Image (cartoon, rainbow, N blue to C red; front, side, top):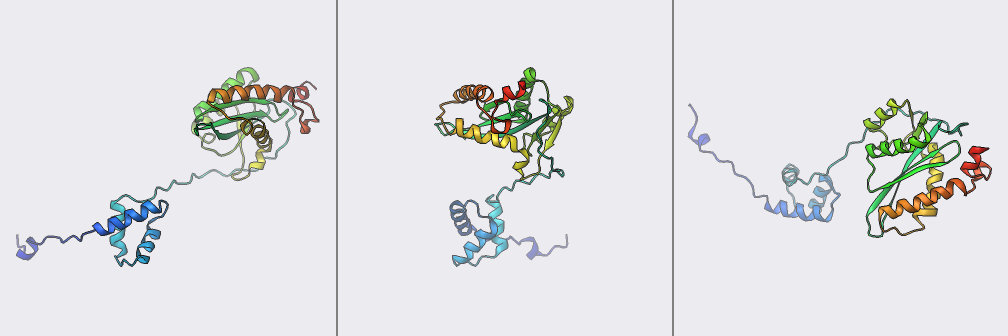
Length: 243
């Protein structure tokens, strides 16, 4: 084969990387959010002079690379002026909140109000709220209230999901996305969330999801029929609607 004897018998001499593995594991365990560059500088400060290519090869073989979640590219969101609608079911506002039970388990709530009279149309309490569960919740609200012409909401994963957009299109509902980082553009529901936080979530210790939902439903009834609203001329949402 015209191959020299020295080349044919050559065996690659691999360096022992055990010491590098030990140092990398100790540093990565201590600094869990450090990437390769920070870990490498820490190694140099400790006095080790290993080549950065060699250290990076060991770093990758140990699978210490940090997982970076790519940022979703959102379409351009135009500012939508926050104006009180003249009729109910013109615009609903949707937003989410979170809290914990006494056992430390987290739960979330999906809150929806009518911008016209600030009526609390519904609050769904659950351990998680994927887009399909949110859509089912909106359909249940619409059974008694009817579907709105538009819904104002933020750019959360549940709201920008394909299933949410398809559902809105099937019911001729316009989704009014606020600009990222501009919660004031959804001010009505943000003010509602503050009240719900102060009068319910911060007021009780909850043992389970069912208890949260029961207390929330009782509070919504009082909110809609008894609690006066300064922005409505000190009328309740139901009184404002009748007037």
